[in-house]
Amino acid sequence: MKSCLLILLVAATVSAAGCARNRVIVDTKNTNMAQYEQDYAECETYAGQVSTGGQAAKGAGFGAAVGAALGAIFGNSSDVARGAGAGGVVGGARGAAGGEREKDQVLRNCLRGRGYRVLN
Image (cartoon, rainbow, N blue to C red; front, top):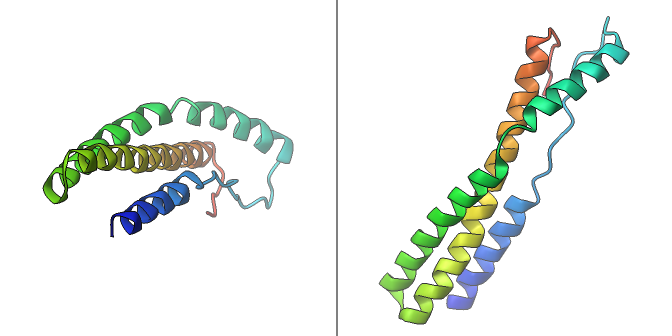
């Protein structure tokens, strides 16, 4: 049972960490593509200001606390440490994925603000 839980936690971590940023798709009809590429690069700079590391750290701390609590409830002292470790990894991955989603949103909002019709 414990090994199944660990496998599920590892699978969730890999899944969350594997989220890659997608290229924004805009309607290019009547669009100056050279200007779009310049605007995209500038908007990407703004998106880069989102702190994914901070969100990952918060997620790791919260995940470790939850994992330790579950280990304490359902096991012994070594289960607390394993639960905290697994929870920290999963929480950190989820926090980082949330940061990446926020970066994508900033990028899309920036492009919309510059008049592009964002399709995705």
